[in-house]
Length: 377
Ligand code: GLU
Image (cartoon, rainbow, N blue to C red; front, side, top):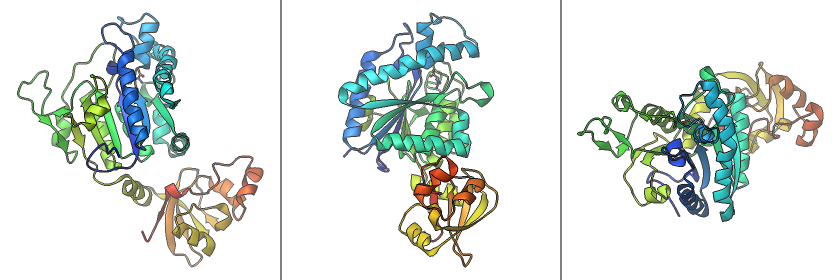
């Protein structure tokens, strides 16, 4: 069984691929043979039972070549135009290398809002969970054509970390053009030392990012955004690694122990998520549930509308809710999949009746078990 790192084995791996790995910085051409080698690595992971999610940059770089804009300095809207032209080719390139191995890909384009707004976050998470359940490899990028300056990540490092958090991944690998974090920028300082493991994201570590040179026309991330990604990932219970992905089969090289920097998570993804739900979200309402529903929750089941007796508070889909028994004891907290208005209309109803009443359903449970934390656990 493949274990990506010595720390944990959650069977969910996010791999971020930077533009400079996919597209030759000199010619602007796609590095097809490198991509083929990556596909062999992905097969190795999926055969070992890992769910693999790719966060791939490269739409703008590929689009520049396609639209003959390679050597020019582009405005934001021109870059967005290039992304629109390049994104389809980017997804197609992955499909071409993965489908011969029997793997199916799916394109997922996200914006900052999709990862920051809890309602949209729940939707995106649901879609990704379904894709993974169907053994599909999601290929994620920022939706560059609609993401304007104020609402865009601009770099895929943080997007990859948010994605890892969203799907409770145990490992995030940033394939980069540098083999990890150094005490100073090694291109400028000869005495810069490589750091193999970072135990905690101290201010000393954050200050090591420095200012960097970037290749014209290529990606927009640097060590700063990678450290910001490490902050997000490690807090979410995900170990993160920065490695030099340039040579073929980067993941195999990582598994063979090639030098890189590991950022260690402070807890596991499950506990991070529990903490997030139970501690960091202000509850917007209360649900009173019957004994049958309480017993189901204790067995690890989702909360269904049929077991709800009463609702108080005004809340929206994605808000945090306190769950109580009729004697007013708090038994759980969770993120609800319906607004209070809609939840009112379906309490006590069976799953089969919900779509008829509302004209839609958000995947049946009022609160999915993944979004529930029991008080006595
Ligand atoms: N979303 C951008 C692209 O596909 C890349 C952002 C980044 O460089 O990380 O070109």
